[in-house]
Image (cartoon, rainbow over all chains, first blue to last red; front, side, top):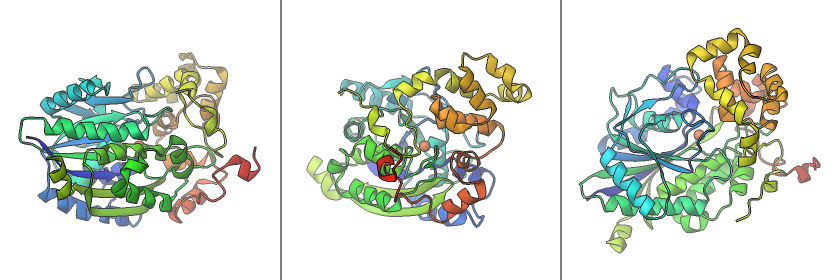
Length: 287
Length: 132
Ligand SMILES: [Fe+2]
């Protein structure tokens, strides 16, 4: 049986990808941020999953305005890297996990989550920056990836409750997959940031840290936080954090905090990162 | 549930990209999407007006693009992730482009970010700020 062994949350700042690609990670500006991910890269070497389900959003990179799916899942063999206007990032193509992805898509639809099924998808910084942060710069990514794209760009985004619930449904679906696979779920985006308007540059680190605490300890309460509060307190783009609730929903009732990191600023963003594992008691209660 | 698009209007200095705004800005944002392709980027930079005239955009939207008035683009239904294709075409970073929407120059904006970003105190509500 497949099993969810860990959850990762991380910001996915595009400039971080550029810093990796241009070899600037040791520049004085970037070094403190990349140093914060050294633990994670080491941890990942001994905890490499077979498959990572990466919850992310497209930033007008692959999806235009013709089609704006609320929840979409990539079921392809592989996913090319988007040209976001600067040329595609020079990183390996992302290999998919078509069998698990197909099982997941079907399970979720039968559980009343009406997924858009993507047989073709190019992935942008929302997905590739987390890969670079967690895996470094290998010639080939060490895990298969299932992209799950969430609309966080256009209001109404899915509610926090819906995100938390789909996370729980992902957990059930993975556990019902017959192959023995080690699966992680990654929630990406955030934390507080706003990249438009006169209020651009907004950062709210105390709010971000409270969000992390609540995500770990009381997601059942956190799920009801309205979009409006994210937008006021974490900035118009901070609403991306609803994607972390999907990851949290997939980990079961209780989690152990393996690692936590905050850094301000990464470009315009409050960078936040968590590694969580399902608690042993969570596994017991659900067995 | 009845949608409430008014709830965002009190957030100062912020344009929330709602489903209504998305409809208003459709052609502007689609023009931006075309700039994902390198040949289109070259064509746009070679003659911006001619390139814009190929799109079913309003004159206000075209003027906003020609003058790189990002706030005006937002007001006319643009979304920043789409608009990013315009400044990426010119090789500008988010920080460089985003700072133009604030009352700071890029150096001041960068200094603010390095010092921890814009503090939220005073930026929660137009009413609180006496702007509404
Ligand atoms: Fe993002």
